[in-house]
Image (cartoon, rainbow, N blue to C red; front, side):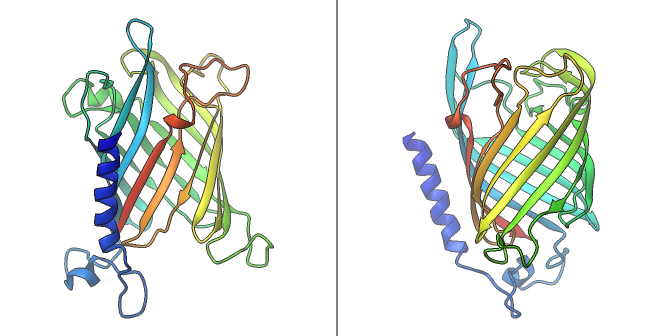
Length: 287
């Protein structure tokens, strides 16, 4: 835990040094064009964005001898969103673990990826493909097989708070609701080592309430309409909170719990709780 605090403190100091506020001549949040004083390579066109982050979460899993093991994962992640046409994007997340010990699960991912049309505006659709499988650089998982285990999705954005609403505490306040449907061609066991079935459908709705000055709480519920497709590691609900400002050179923080949270009466895979969620500090950028 001491190493975790050291790494968080170092990154926080680095980020605060840059996050005092970069602005262009018009007073808007600056892009890399304003910082580097260059006019090339799509600088200033909002084509590339993302974040550099440090994260921590406790992973609880059942070992081969049927004992529960707690593994403290902490590291650095790099996220990049490349926009090609309007809201058509390629998204990539890379992870570098800072700790290594004998309890580290072999199925932790080195990267995630997604491709689709992501529209943040009110009353619009988003759709595409996302893959959060145990994608590994060491070859322990076949990337072609994992490709079949990602999911295709379509979602719809709807904003509940209008300008005259009593919940409109400031310009950032909003309640976002996004119902979605996902289709997974192939699904596996918890560790991605054995195929359990095909053509899995997941229905759900996610909600984020931005309360005041970009501080938010969020949650989602999931429903599995096909009998026998809901696994003990599939969540019935997820939740989180944090501070998020989409502008460039901003320091954000978040907590997200996407593990197997289950409603009463539903089988649960492991002894997961609040401490198994992910804590993250992020430094955003816009190219």
